Amino acid sequence: MVREADFVKALQLERVIAPEGKTLPIEVANVNRPGLQLAGYWDFFGYERPQLLGKVEMTYLSMLDDATRRERLAKLFSYDLPCIIICRGLPCFDEMLVLAAARKIPIYRSLKETTRCEMEVITFLSDALAPRETRHGVLVDVYGSGLFITGNSGVGKSEAALELVKRGHRLVADDVVEIRRVSDVRLVGQAPELVRHFMEIRGVGIIDVATMYGVGAIIRSKSIDFEVHLELWKEGQEYDRLGLTDQYTQIMGVNIPRLLLPIHPGRNIAAVLEVAASNFRLKQMGYNAAEVLTQRHMQRAMREDNDEA
Image 1 (cartoon, one colour):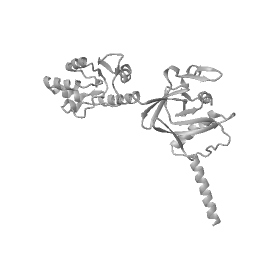
Image 2 (cartoon, rainbow, N blue to C red):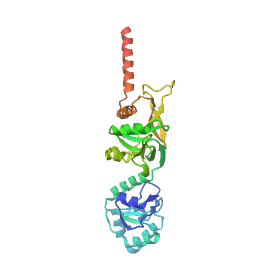
Image 3 (tube, one colour):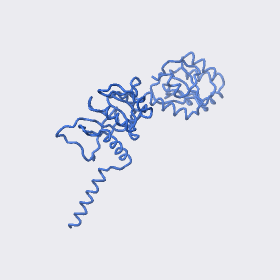
């Protein structure tokens, strides 16, 4: 379901005939242009989608005689349509108003071109209908990358995020992160509305980051690009020292790069997280420092072998 008020506001729609404060029964992030249906072909009709009527559809309807137009529109409105959007600010036929009122099907008008309106509707629905999940952690925008900090309670996630904010980075969410899967390969996180921009610092209490550090220290939502899991240093456990093997975690079916970061007193976690974010960006650009160093060692070893030979 999609909130009707959000739908109208986000897409800048005019209510031609629509009840306010309702929800729209939209379950798929797509639209349908019923040109073939208005021409008489009703097989494979995506009636569960919002119906977009552009210049082509409205011009075709205006060319039909009154009896045929009423017949085609009556057939169209016999389906449980979530809504109809008339693009380009075109006027609505009187028959449509009568049928919409009888069937309680909302009709909206958009001043935008049909193709642009279609793209914006799909984009809005993809976000509004995206699968959601709530996870414990902290999300920070570091050098343009969404850093998802996880770890056991009390390990220092909020303190590390606060230090990052003081260094000029932006907080997205503390303690609770609402995650949306907006595509098969992309996750977006944000804070719940009730606790947005607030942080809990043990021994200090609740602080308002936006008030304390300014609006430049916060951001409403951010893609989750990689995860850093904090854990207390365990004596005898082997940790990755080179970074040659990429580790991943799966969140809502999406593989996210993952870094296990051991911490102990005296270690500057914020500085390490900044380095991790910068190194992640370099890997995205095709540069892997660990691989470069390994290649140099291999080339030196080959030269030494050749000299001995």
